[in-house]
Image (tube, rainbow, N blue to C red; front, side):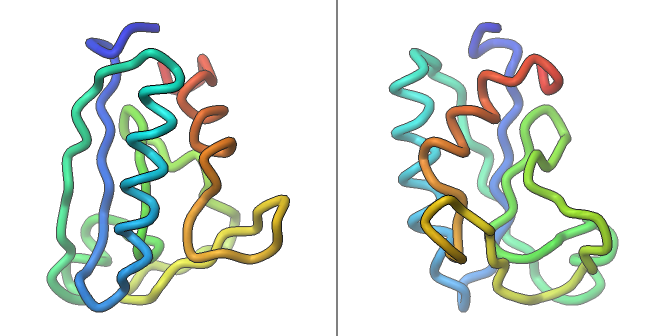
Length: 108
């Protein structure tokens, strides 16, 4: 997979600041994987947008339109998202989780 084949979106809203850590870790994961893909930052403005965008909370990462961390039964709305990581619950996926998602051919 090349960075030209990747479309990466990071959905967020300003009052949930964990998106900043997610963005930093995503950039680090891209660099470690040797990918130079652009991260499109998408600010979600309210519940109407959240529903229309199927926004599972801030931050939400989509790779080629797929949320690799979406779990069944997740609702859409203006909430801070929590991720189950090997280090416990966090407000963002770990760098290792992001790198694995970038390598996953399902999203290529």
